[in-house]
Image (cartoon, rainbow, N blue to C red; front, side, top):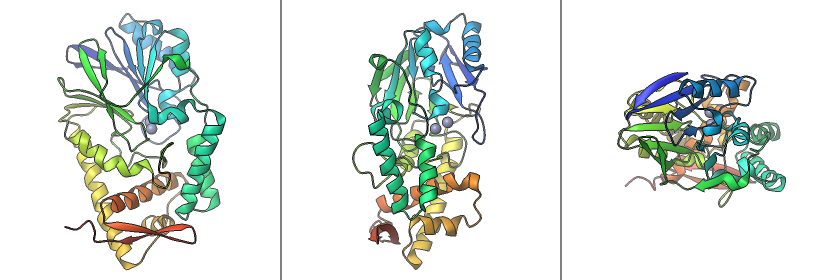
Length: 332
Ligand SMILES: [Zn+2]
Ligand SMILES: [Zn+2]
């Protein structure tokens, strides 16, 4: 547990046990005031609920007093204890409507989205085994089982009062379709979840939208999300993994410049001949390990899609595989 004073209230960070990914374990935060707001719920793992309860008790609160839980995105390491908290409190749950299927969808909806995701990977030239294991990574998990009438779908712009902190919900697509951040303009405090957490490339999987164009992922929206967050002037940033840092731009700016350097390198590669994402992955990451493969796929897809929306590359289809070539449409 770690306490940071912001705008006259205590912001409490709780890192959770049971994380199997690389790097720092996921955080939940609560603002130690009424209405009692919890941001994310950590991992379902022995001892974690007790860890949250003990942290609350330090500030004379109990689990039953939690008023609102904001689920910043559907990933299992941020939503694991949602059911336990729902059972022990009357809390309402905020999440973005674009996360509905992955959080609460029925088997048919989830199966259909998983099948589209497998087709998405295949269309980028990735082999059947890799497409299946990448899809499994995103869909082989339990849905969040909380009473649906307590779930409120947000779109961004909503206000979340947390004691003296006036938080605003920001929709920040990229990491997932309905990824959320929370921002206090008055106190310049940003809860950035996994959108910004100190890793150069924080995305483990490619996620396609549950509605609309499924031939393009939401990763292509990530650079615009970073630009939007960069303009907030956030001084304290509370990330989804790891310790808070200041200012937010200290982490946002290097991610943006890393992506731009990679985009330039990819542009040079596509100027030679058209390539599919699987070809680009071989060129960029010839010795990628099994454990790094997921990030490599996501990075390559993001770069191709961003070059495309910026008019610096265009796609064609050859025998069902998408190929990308350099384009000068984006050059004024
Ligand atoms: Zn995540
Ligand atoms: Zn995470």
